[in-house]
Figure (tube, one colour):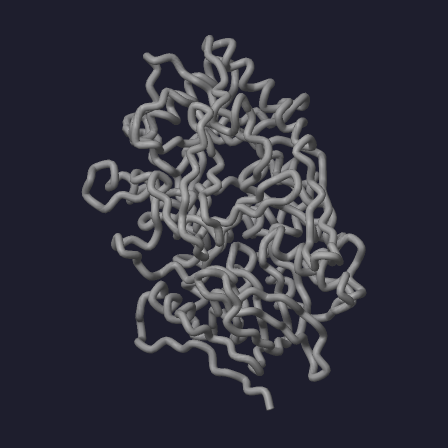
Amino acid sequence: MARRRTLLRAAVLGAPAAALLARSAAAGAALASGDHVPALVIGSGYGGAVTALRLTQSGIATAVVEMGMAWNTAGSDGKVFCNVLNPDQRSYWLRTSTDQPIGYFLGISANKSIGRYTGVLDSEKFAGIRVYQGRGVGGGSLVNGGMAVVPRRDYFAQILPSVDLASMYDTYFPRANTGLGVNAIDPAWFETAECYRFARVGRDQAKASGYPTTFLNNVYDFAYMKQEQANTVPRSALASEVIYGNNHGKRSLDKTYLAAAAATGRLSITAQHVVTAVVPSSAGGYSVTMNQIDTAGAVVATKTVRADKVFFAAGSVGTSKLLVAMRALGKLPNLPDAVGQGWGNNGNVMVARANHIWNTTGALESGMPAMGIDNWADSAGPVFAEIAPFPAGTELWISLYLAITKNPNRAAFSFDSSTGGVGLNWQTAWNQPAIDAAKRVFDTINKKQVTVYRSDLFGVNKVWGDDFTYHPLGGCILNQATDNYGRLPGYPGLYVMDGSLIPGSTGVNPFVTITALAERNIEQILTIDSF
């Protein structure tokens, strides 16, 4: 008979929540074959972390399954994460060389050989795009730049018209910001901080060219960053740490939502397990099959557990691929046709400009952006552009930007019966609307500043970084592939809780929106559904 396991309990009253989380995600895994759990969450990113916290706070024992590692053990250098200047095996997910967004310098490849390892950043390649995703307990929160931006109210109404605006902006966005630990930079400190000279240069050039700018809130602790600048604490954001993780200062999900869930004593986290199947169980609920992997990606065990309810939170790509495969293989054959549809890249495109030699951006650049160009009101080509760091540790006279645009193109996932894999039909050429919108802004800035684009950072003679995205969205659109709260029709007890619910675009960095939408959905599910 399947046993119902007792999930992690606090060993010491008052122990730090982060320590509890480390125990719940420890090597050896919490789940074993034959286990029966009330709730199983696939993925530990934003949607999964919110779900885990609210379930456990409601008294429900919850198991989270995460394909990546628990990043809680220091390497030989005494640090958990490596930095962008010295990537090693910790940097990338099962690759033998890095695949950096800025992969060239002076037209020469800047990528480096690394050992194959279950590293923290995945560059998943499809036919026309690379999709960057976090791998580890905490998901994308481990590897992003922390920009916590609430979308424009009028644009949110366009992308998710079935969602009540007042409740999102009065309740769920504020709740998400609180849970994530969002904070604002001290504007006076910003004006003098050496590490934000690059952002001030970008701001001043934008303003001189007629474009408004705005401060960006962040989940990185700006008070800690002040201490970094003063050299009174170990540096992280000021030590070129960003896309491969931050050792200090960043309020990633393992320190916020997941830590709070662990503190309830009702959470288990099973790391380094890849879910391969979810099927209805004759005993009730769903059978969930998963492969346990080692740090080289080899399968070391296959397990099947039963869950009364399953929450898909593996991210836009992970959730969409799994559900598309389950439908095609006849395991969840009645999933709607809309599953796998409506995927977009949030209009991402990167660009860099070469500044004049007298207009320095600084050798010390914080890895956490704090300023953006807000040209979203331009109906001819809306752009919200993060003034991005280039933390190379030396003066480069480069202004770098990640532009978010209103690209209408959408892609679909499909199952390939010959390989058993799931592909995405996005074409690189579909990012032309993003380039056109960004070009309107940066052509103007270049003309005003008498500067030029850098064409050596994204390839040979390639101006635009148009073949990758940091912001995958869509694939299981809310109120199309699911009901209006993420329930999968025809399969009671199956839910989608992540960025796959959002139809390809938020107009800003999307994680606050994903978090707030998950807060909304899980509140309704806990209120209406039986557990």
